[in-house]
Each structure stands twice: as C-alpha cells, then as structure tokens.
Length: 119
Image 1 (cartoon, helix red, strand yellow):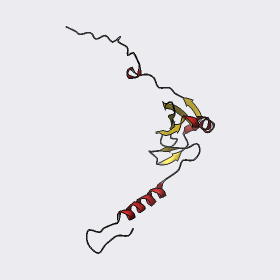
Image 2 (cartoon, one colour):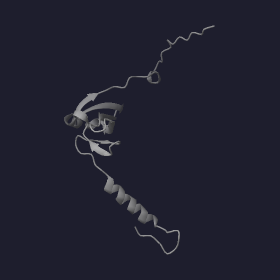
Image 3 (cartoon, helix red, strand yellow):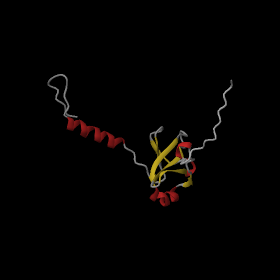
Image 4 (spheres, one colour):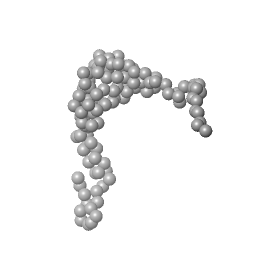
C-alpha cells in the first residue's frame, strides 16, 4: 500500500486505503454454495446437519432458514425470500415453523392474571 513516508506520522491516501480494504475483504469472502449456510462460529460455509433446515417466517415476504452446523453444532441462519422456498425445498429437508403468538402480538391481550397479596 503506497504511503507518504518522508515525515512522521506516515500518511496514507484515503482512496488507497479504501482500495486496500476492499481487496482484502474480497480475498477473505467465502460464497455459500448450494445447500450451504454460513457458520459464524466456524467462519465457513457449511451444509446443515442431515441437510435439514427449519423455515421461520419473519414477515409475509421473507424468513430465516435455521440449521445446525455439523462441525461445531451451533445454529446457522440464512435470510431467504419466500419466493425461493420451492427451490430451497429441493436443496434441504425443510420444516416450517410458526411463531407462537405472545401477549404483545395479540389484538386482545388476556386479562386472566390473578395476583393475590398476602396480608
């Protein structure tokens, strides 16, 4: 990386630094292939254990694929579009999970809580 070294502190041009950082990031980048999800713990693309993944919807148009890393057994996740589900079903043994509604998600919260004070 070119630097101005005739005086201290050494100076590096911003454009040179940006180009250097982009090149370094591109060298380290690992693309996931088919049937792979990136494991943050291993820092490598991995095929989920038994090629099984759960689809958890986030909103009507997208969701998350969740699997288990076969090496470190951590949960691995990948955001996906709902439109890609038919293609993903051919790559993974997909299971669909639904969010269980919490009290905050319901239109009419339950009021059957009873607090008893001991006097």
